[in-house]
Length: 126
Length: 126
Image (cartoon, rainbow over all chains, first blue to last red; front, side, top):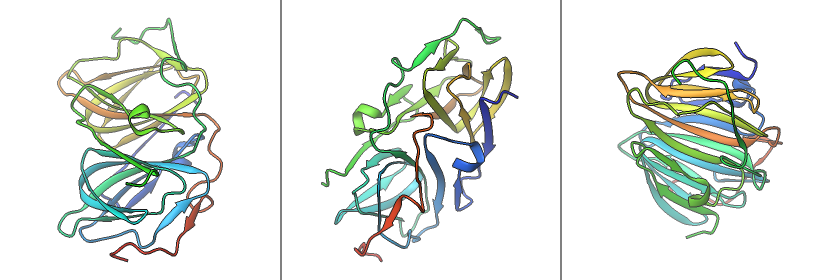
């Protein structure tokens, strides 16, 4: 297998799985999380230099962010800047499965059209 | 609403949604994608400096990576380094929904315990 590729299979229902070390990531840390009904991350936190992107994959919950409560549901994606003070919980009657992507704020330079390069190789189906 | 927070709701079945501009992301670009059954991204590509992390949220498919074909299914998460030549398609008989996170390779410094800071504030439920 190419050294450019590494894969793991994650059971999203299994509490919390952190991918950085398992995949040898160098640009982000990603966690896959499920909070059971009525469960909460038991603290408010912020970050020194990392931006967080959350994606809600299933269920419902809430985030407290800088003093306001925002309801969350499957399909919601949101950015929290390093200075944002945040706490997350699942709904009282429903679990919430979500991912959290940590990256260094301001680190992205080009992307997609400016960073991608078309190759002449063809996959078998192309 | 805090300037540290921005949220969008994404219909993952709606082809391709790019989050960078919608959320004001500064550390990554993320796309949420669904390929219908038998559909393929129509080219092989690599990157100049961005690492990609993919997560398969639903369905099945395949990736061609540096000359090898790897089957993909819901729950699979994988890193592709910038130099990896890659092409993705859905299964012949099933759609595949996946996310792709682009970050600058080598950009992550501290994370989680080294970058996170506990706060004294309390959410209403803490």
